[in-house]
Image 1 (cartoon, rainbow, N blue to C red):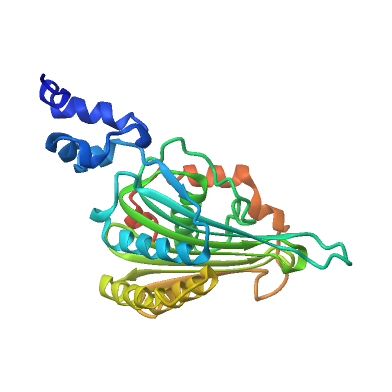
Image 2: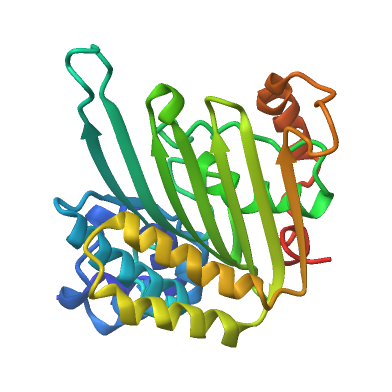
Length: 302
């Protein structure tokens, strides 16, 4: 019997496979060499929308172990499976004092590896992080573009250039005055590396954002190498996140340029109501003006 890959030209097979959900595609080990070649080809990766595989490890240690594999995947994308975008999620509930009738304060932590291309069934991030709708108006153009190109692209499910990769770590806690939100992004633009960090205190409306670009590959490799060597001794995602931020700080020391944005402004009272920074209509309009240019010049380039 003649197999399908012998009857159809490679271009037709790529078109067919690119419209199949990842879960219905044949396992790599059971396919012919022709199918393996197609499913790992640059053309197939380019035309197939990237589905996001959500993984929820049962323990913090397993979360750390899988997170280490995602870092390896970020540095060596050829090792990635057909599912290119993977998000780890870890939720934990802290019960408050019953006498004071305080509420439960859920923690939500995640690490997502986003690989370039169109995201299949693109939808905004389901979990509320407080900064899902944040737009740093008034910041330097390079920082604002970097925020949209990296963090907001992941949270909003927006397409990114094929040459790009984003590693985004997030940590959020609900709970009144104890609430906080943090995101740390490491980006490969296709030509160099960039880092973006954002801390938000939703109770007091304090926000600090830093962006650095033009970071060399050897600096990134060295910093992540130290992190991966330590990872087997790390038992909590909180410790892992701290080690990841330390690695990013080492990269920032070798950056070609950097910008910061702080709210409220350090030079006095803010001129606008804080709600302006969460204006969806304004953000959508601003984002569309960039018309998805190349991430290398759009995000971290000057």
